[in-house]
Amino acid sequence: MDNTLDIDGMIAQGRAHFDSAIAHLQDELVKVRAGKANPSMLDGIMVAYYGNPTPLRSVANLGTADSRTITVQPWEKDMLAPIEKAIFEANLGITPMNDGEFIRIGIPPLTEERRKALVKQCKSYGEDAKVGIRNERHKMMDFIKKEVKEGYPEDAGKRKETTVETLVKDYYSKVEEIVNSKEKEVMTV
Image (tube, rainbow, N blue to C red; front, side, top):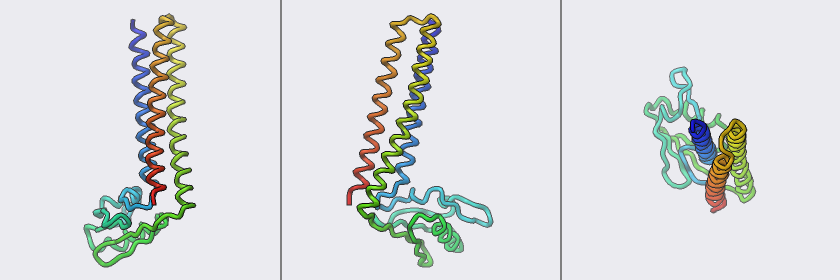
């Protein structure tokens, strides 16, 4: 009976890997610009704050004025120029506008060609998530087969394999759902 814990533990570990693949997919898709202003587009930008590289969110308040404008309000006025420079150097294809109080970033509407390229990128991220799920599935199945060879009941092993396959199908459909939702968002003008 001790082997059941081993296999169930492996399945639980696999499920955790599946969850992290989904979380990673969602993180990647948030960065895909869908023509709408989203402060998370500026995640990862580092600003020179008294000589130290500091995340933008740590030196300013980020928000959206409307669906096409991101606002950046520094907590210290003398940080306007370094923030503007950091955003410009991040090469996001957006130009910051400094009005002395705020930095406003206008998000241009996407062309049809650019939308299609972004959809391809989204599908690629989805495929990467599926590859991660598939790799973990392979490890789980090998583990179950090894346990069966070492004396775990064969019929119980088959049931565990079926459980793994069901999990994989569920996570594949989650990936498809997430990618299709982002695809709709990108293609909506």
